Length: 317
Image (tube, rainbow, N blue to C red; front, side, top):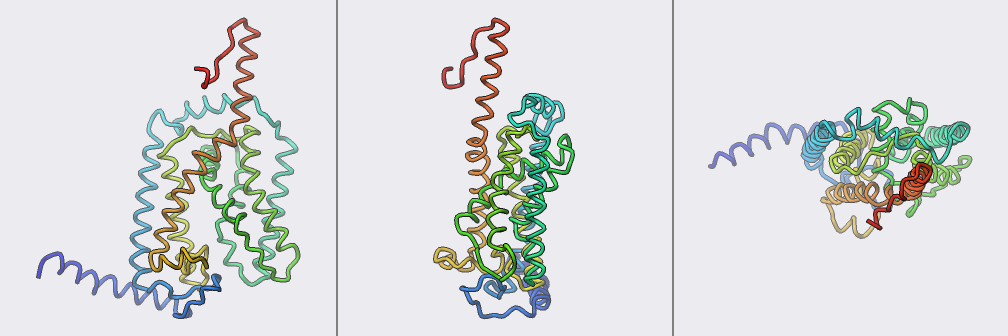
């Protein structure tokens, strides 16, 4: 018998199998029969063995991606480097929106929507679904609104959020408008998701936060964080409680996801990567067009006042 087979056999018998039995014990209430029409409840759609192997492999992979992305992004000369951040911050001091009272209105709307969400989840007996990414992103926006805008952590949180806009658009395109009898459930769904989409645009144009230059290393960092939240937090709590948090235990009820079978989560994580790139490299760049035009016009106005010839646009050059 070859050495590799001996090692694999040892790992299977001494590591994987005991770990699989442990996972099955902590999730003992989950049924083995999957009702694909009910995507709220967790089942053993994936075997305990596959959950065990994927939990380790995915979390190690995404943690390594996060560390590599952070290392590359923090290198001297990158947007994270203090002088560069300060330079970028000064470049947007001429705000399109003044903020002030508008900031307070936005914060009140965010807090009101989140309070309604907590009410709906707690009294609807599904409080674990407060961990759904949309609700966590709403909490992240509240954190950004109340935190000092000059903080690097706040700036990084905002720029990471810009990679997750695709998730809000996906939720709006396939809304979950299940009525549970509580007050304003459907209305708050639309309020919450339009806030998730529109508030980042407001924050861009208000100049509250600097938008980092396009950076693949930061896209990789943001993607890894989003995936770690799914592979570690949502999968872990899903197994412990039997809730199918953001489809980490059972795939969405769609022919495509069902056709992928036990490999559906791999497709989900690949789709997340594509969504993060589209959000930052396409959507956010479109959102910033008006701001860039305003800055270009202001630069030309200042130069005209100083008797300097008009600055050519990028396309003219």
